[in-house]
Image (tube, rainbow, N blue to C red; front, side):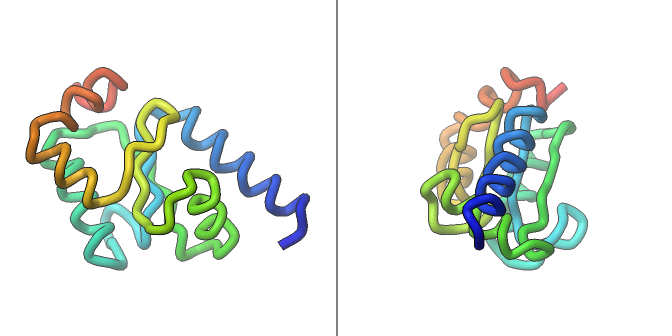
Length: 113
């Protein structure tokens, strides 16, 4: 990937995560997750009552798939961003949900009514 293309991808990611309260970079879509970890992340977000969620299917663009890993310095997908901040992957979502820490963060971001 050229430096210009990489810069464009990182700008797209930055713009996406800062323009929406909750963004999940995942494999597949919320309706049709393409991996178990993405499916679990969607399940957790539904369980806590997220109503404002933007998803990005990284399987549609290899540059975005790699770019989001570089952006967060996190090697795996899915990746959850809340209010522009990287929260983590499914393991962290599981832990935060189990400890009742996830819903307050999402509520503060305006993603839960």
